[in-house]
Length: 112
Length: 443
View 1 (cartoon, each protein chain N blue to C red):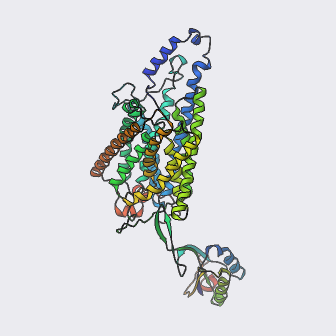
View 2: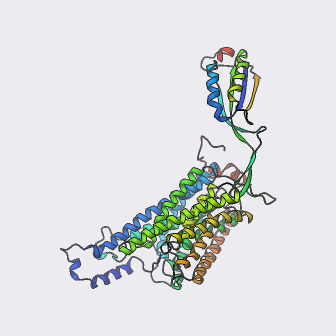
View 3: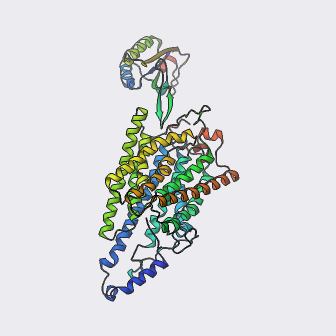
């Protein structure tokens, strides 16, 4: 099993979710995050004083899929989340040691 | 707002004198009094009641404005301060404030009054103060002004003050300081004898609140992290600008009552027309202040700053408050516009002096209040610059010094500032144990 972590632009979430579910993904977790990469910060002014805005809002997806599906999932996310402009995000793939479905107690691939 | 007589024994005496002068038929048991006899009383009472609840709603305005400009972790505290101070003001005003501020005959400087007593239930026309209004309507209209003064202090000192010393200060401000200084002008005291003119309270209400806030901000010190060692200013953005904007619009609405009600009479053609003039001028000044701040922040900073636009509208309102009746609409426009200019430049100025005013209360209420009091001379020929300045200085010295004394005593006796860790974690948890947004708070 593989854990896929992807940071994408927030407005791309719906498109990515749609594409993943139509290729067979049956679950994912989504968190709102802030981050920076090469999309560096900028300064703003509040009541006459400057301040630096270092982080940009992003959305983080985390999904665990059977290893056989992992490459296809990564490609789908990359293709749908891309805009071609700075800040499109990153995708990471990790190994997962164990998985359990809470309701039934099924483990590993049966839990996904 | 000029008021020399006070409802009660004195006014009843006046009414009795007026009655003996009227034809006896007017109050014969089989003929109801006509509009001429009781109409003005009824209309003036209506003005007081309506204006009173408009000004009351400014408490919601202040609460929303302040709540929106503080961080999420301090919102519950700010709300508690606002409802607390309003309620304390109302009670203190009944206990001693109202009669201290309107003592009737007094030495012109100082008189401690007793509790307020309302007219009896179903007061008959014969026993009523027909030249004015019932005690209840006057008493209802006044405390909302006191509460506004206390609210000003609440905004400036947000995010780092303990709740108890703050509320104790409110007791003293609303029960003692405001009524005494208010008596000098609206109670018929020495400043009104001198010809000082402050229609609805640019000085009596707004600058008093501003001076008390300034004293508090100096004694309390700035928030942790606001000013860096090298003099750099680190902005601390507010949590909800939609609430702040809502608050500003509510204050704008309430101000029609604040200024309009200060006509204190609506029983004649002239009076009711004056009330409409006041409404129109008040609105114009607010609009001018807002637009000026919009244009100026765009010009100076490259982008408009909503919080400054909000402050600009309020500064415009404060600026017209000393004389909302006499100016033309164009007069109200430029007077309000200058209020907007004052705010845009004095907000950063306070930062240079390391005076941390969270919501801009001092620029809006103190500096624009001083400007508004001076601006009276442009359209009101009864006022003179010298007298206006005398009043400004008198209120300033009294309120600032008295406030400093109270703040220092509170600081020595119980401490006014929360600890560093409490300030960082937020007053909601440390002072009240209650988050404003428990599901969304970042802690």
